[in-house]
Length: 161
Image (cartoon, rainbow, N blue to C red):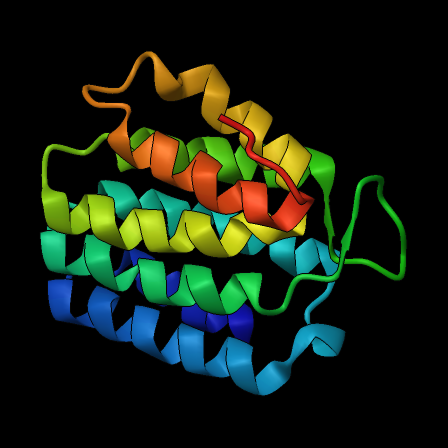
């Protein structure tokens, strides 16, 4: 069922793409972490992050809902393992893809992406902070990166700015 829902993300109709985001978020939450495989995660996050480049701002914001739902299904390991569905390599690609959109000129997009990144931080706080620090100086304002680093510091027991 996930491939069919993911295909809806590329529909020509804006409303169909937005609805595909809502349905995909619901489906992921109903499946639960044990029923989302490593391969499904590897196929899912690039398709969802592509929607952050959608021509419709409504779809761009809506795409953040299934991204959060996807993060709720993560069984993380720094290295690949059959028992886990997300590893450090994919985590890095995922976070870097989001960090580009954290610097979006639209504050609504920034806020939606920041929420997804806040949910990603506890998965691997040291790696997350390293990735955020690497782009912090390239953003128009470091305010959102600084807030993410500050919040992620609580997951490692210290301040990571």
